[in-house]
Image (tube, rainbow, N blue to C red; front, side):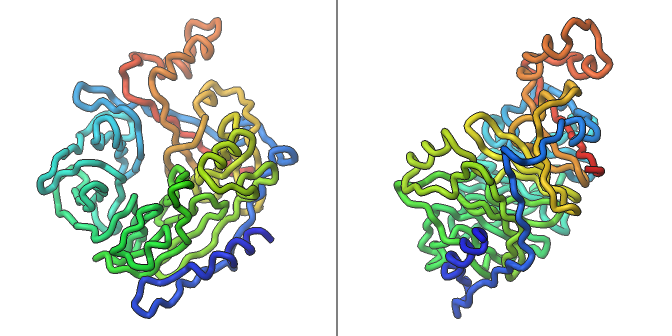
Amino acid sequence: MKYIYVIIVLLPFFCSCRPNESRVKVDISKLEEIIIDPKKGIALPMDSLIKNIFFVKLETKGDNLIGKISQILFVNDLLFVVDNESSKSINVFDMKGSFKYKISHIGNGPGEYVEISNVCIVPGKEQIAILDRPQSRIIYYKYDGQYVSMEVIPFINDYFEYLESGNKAYEIYGMNDPKLGNNKQNSLIVADSTNNLIYSFFKDIYKPEFHYTKNRTLRKFQGNVYYSPNITDTIYLVKDSTVEAKYHINIAEKNVTDMKFETSEQFNDLLNDNYFFNGDFIELKDFTYINVMTPWGYPSAVYVHSKKKVFLNSGVGNHPFFNFLTNEPKARYNDNCIVFDVQSYIILASKDKLYGNKKSDPLLDPLFDNLTEDSNPVLFFFHLNENL
């Protein structure tokens, strides 16, 4: 089977960061095959896949404008909305969308950052951690934005996630930091709470002629950290001393990972006509929600854990908010809910289509009330149907 072949081929590169260079154990015993067949798969209307929908309009004030949302974190009935490009800040809202406060400390001094590379919730503490990649440091704040401490990272990394033990999983694809010794040959390292290396995993395929990267290879859902290595179709569960192969995403039709390519240009050319699992997924309590990259969009599939069965999204549905179930979701909420963020100008552009000949609609009126092109994005919550 393909996924076993890939794992066996890569096993020689799984090495530990300990002095004795013992290899990390990769557990393949629990690997589940998720077959996504665009031609023969069972496609269901969105009315069957989605149980209910609600939205949260993020309150807009003069000092909390959000350009593009990079992350959404849910903490103690609060929404932490990260904008790492435009405002370089974290705006905090309640679950009704009312603005509470803003975390913004741009600068080079103590407790300040140059860039929000990513944000993590610190396990066991009421704190968030901001990775400032240009300055190779992590800055810790309380939930209310009060500065706590700063930690220097002794090696270059792209972003990280916390394991529940306090250990950290770092994405180092293409970093090639000599401080990591032989471990720089791999794309993921796991370190303890003080950044002593425990092990590294998965051979780094970056090279000058091939530098394509997935959207986000490290993801955390409800305490579990998942890693989907670049240009692969396997999702791994990252643990403190081992890596567990969790899912193999088997796209049965025109799968790019089955094809030969040497350069980024060749790979991009293949994407023009073929399918690819770009690492976009949300792990839920009862489902895995998966987006597939295609030449014509990002169709989704729902893998039902209990039945080990896949249902494709037909793209057809009656609810007006299905218009905003596009591309990949930004976050998980509670057990089986996926969250999309939609810019206000996109919503306004769909107004005439959604209303049709109607002047008023009880579903749509609250959404468009006081919404302008300068309003903050709107979050849409789609609760999947547990009876699938």
